[in-house]
Length: 416
Image 1: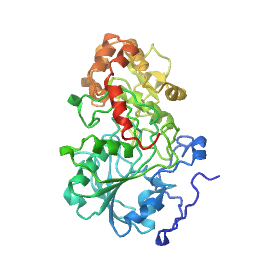
Image 2: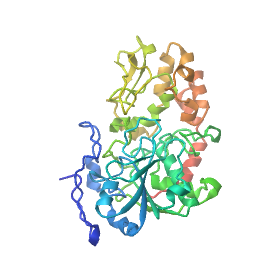
Image 3: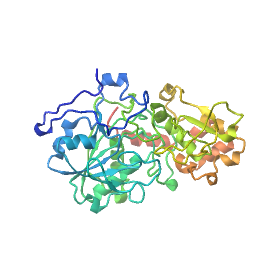
Image 4: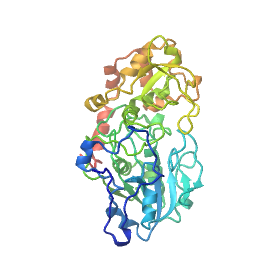
């Protein structure tokens, strides 16, 4: 059985077959499967795949699309697919890493003309992160189709918020083609302290928020979180045959350094280490699957050496230095599904093992380090690790905020 069979849509002019396309990013063998076998049986269909539900909404309209390489219909990018059936796409908007996904994390992406389609591509990452009135002037409807991974500091939900703000202020409708959340089976972590709002955390949600982008859009509207409490007119094409407990493996890597299912499920925990002097594997072909530092030599046998890799990590932390630590490439990720929690034990363990503890959270040591407080969303996690608090004590400090968020979340769920 083919995973993505040819699809014929009974819409007259809008009949087409999904074809293979070289523009769709190629993944390493055995890296990311399209959907797990048990999910195939459930026939999970992304919003984008259900073209019969939204092509009529685009007929005769000038369309803007917020997309990146995860925006696929079968094996073809959504932009290329919709152009083939005559949709008038007048502008493309790209988040972090760009529309074609070839920019490293944190790199500013400039506006350009997409070489393949000739359509103007506007970057929404950097200083110009909110579409302007001029950007939207020749657009009748915006389409948001980006695969998120369900983590607060993953910046695609920030792009969603900015696009909703612009659409609300300029009276434009936003069509959201929803996609499953691979980390949507649990909710965990401290809720963001408003004093720590930044580019990696805008709203009071926990690290693992347990929402699809469609559900999060409803929360942004419903909680009055857009500036001046404006409401964006949204239309959500739901994922078919999906619930939050279903395992879902992405057909395309969501960003350059999340290139395996292992890394996607470890990311909520391991990205916190970007606020430490430990490498999370950037500069290797297995980022967010290992942890280590040169200073841990003699403490751990496993080692790896970060190198400069174009498009992934040009100047990684501890570049060209052998790092010693934890190899999590074969960690049983079934434990995450069973426990439904972030793994705080690894940070507790590695901090205890680190010889010069003053260096562990010292941002002055490298420009490649992040701010642990902004990543965690609270200033207390760092203090608790340093003080030797137990996992139980740390987790207790996340309440009652975490339980309160879970109650709010229930109002906006589109799926069980």
